[in-house]
Amino acid sequence: MKHLCVAVVDDEPAVRKGLLRFLSTADFEPRAYESAQDFLDHLASERPDCLIVDLQMSGISGLDLLAILRRTGAGLPVIIVTARDDPESYENCLELGAAACLCKPLDCDTLVNVIHSVVASQA
Image (spheres, rainbow, N blue to C red):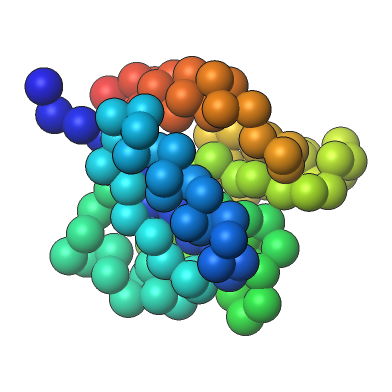
C-alpha cells in the first residue's frame, strides 16, 4: 500500500522536525520545507498528496500560499495550522480553499484523521 506523501511548510525548525517525526511514525511519507517559496520551488517535481502549512510565516504567509495555489489551480488539499484560534482566521483560510484549519498545539489523532479525510475528498 502506498504511503501518503504529506508536505509540511513551517518556518520554525522545531515544529517542522516534530511534525516530520510524527508523520513518519504514523506511516506517512513526509517532506519538509522551511518556507512557502521553498515548497513552490519543488512543487513541479515533488507533488505531495496533502500539504500542512503554518498560517503565519515570514516571507510568503500560509494565507498567501493558499492564494497562489488557488490561482495556479494546483488542486492540492491544504491543511492550515495556526496558533491563532480565532474565527476570522479560520474563515479566511476556508474562503481561500483550505481543506481544514487546525489550532496549535496539534492533536495527533485529529491530524491523522484530517489528513485521511481531506485526501479522500480529493479522490
